[in-house]
Image (cartoon, rainbow, N blue to C red; front, side):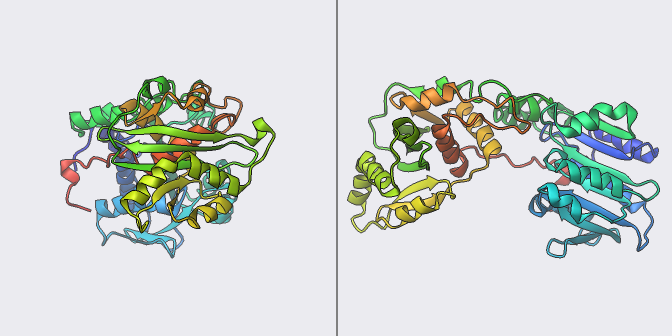
Length: 420
């Protein structure tokens, strides 16, 4: 195996028996922290007693992410003969040691491990786990010399992991090691340059610089850079609609036209029952949409009179009644939106920064919303202020669902290729 300087230092701590009860590797993406954490975990477990009463745990927010981020890479690292697992049975065997597998996605997750006695545990994306689960997990590490291994990207400086544990490292039996992108000297220069371009604002500070910073101010400070004065004259390659459904809250819809170099939001529909004092029915909204985007629907009908080809409509899957209406038309093909908020915001910011989409200046409400779209600094959870954000939701649905931002695969160093 080939190690970076920081990875070699960590392995030296293991060899000298200088690891702590809690060992957290935190920092930027692609910094090599997950790989070395799995190496440490594997070596450490291998040296533990092989006895029936020695139990271990591996956990993440979900079993799906645990498998993708940890179980498969660990199996590639040590070989299937040394690590086998079953997601359905929620257990695995690492060098003959019994490993319990658990997802921890809500406050009730701590009940899953209540009463168990553990020799060791491994957690992925620690900031995504519930605080109660983490506290219960520490109480379950009851065997002599029991240890916790974990990784995380930075979050808010007020996050419980930083405030209650990392900031108190001097008073706790904890090793907190920060990794940055530049620590991973196995990465090619062009890969590093490209991945740095994929993150902007708070996401750059956290995922590239490895900083624990607050989400504050404008969410899209670069929004004016995507505004255009005129629409292209040539026909788009493709057009789709994205919708944020509302009754008393605003109903918003954008038409997105695909051109060779980018997507363009060329036309919008916006209606707020709260502002007008008149609430519209689903049927009225459908008639409005068919009237507002009549040219698009007519163009599709012209190209395919049998309407085998339809207009793709991206919409929040919770809008069940309106989705049913859309599916009853001869022109709409419904595509449920990917409604992951923080990931959607991050990808939208990256798409803006990379110039992957533009917005016609004639859509005034979009500009007004983007200029006032800010982080909720009063909330303990990171989220936008939920006021006048309907076009912002429409944009996020579109970017996230259409996968405008192509996520780069984790770079696989030369020494680790051909092992998966």
